[in-house]
Image (cartoon, rainbow, N blue to C red; front, top):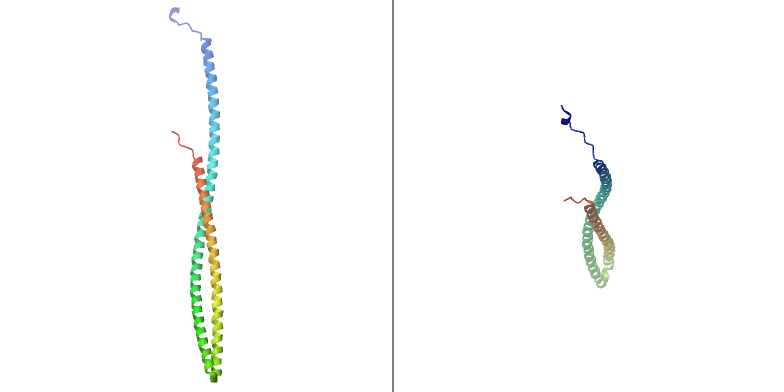
Length: 194
């Protein structure tokens, strides 16, 4: 081979070396910047996930409280219905006792009239009158007892209605809290990328 056929090595331009060096520095700077941004985004994603988990736990707790309140409300409604039924029964018994008392009063009045007209049979009539008076006192005592029971049942009905109102208010409050928690969860959900 001749010397003319061998290519002479060319020297690299110092400008190209500088450009390559600057490009390398720029690539390193961009990579560092992107790395910092990725770390920041990862931190924000972790925080958002923690907030989401906390909100979900709160929502589950509120749902449990709501279920318990609904169960309590159903039980109170059943107790109220039972108390109303007992109250109705006692009112009917009270009415029957009042009818018996009125009947006995009429019988007593008749007996007294007969006693006034039949003084000669005073001993018999007085014995019958004493018996009627005892029955009347017994009927009045039963009537008073029934009225007391009736009053107590009405008072219990009032308490149960107040408890039902309180329970309903708790259910409404818990439902509002649950709705808010679910809205907060929806806000924390990452939005789909377009």
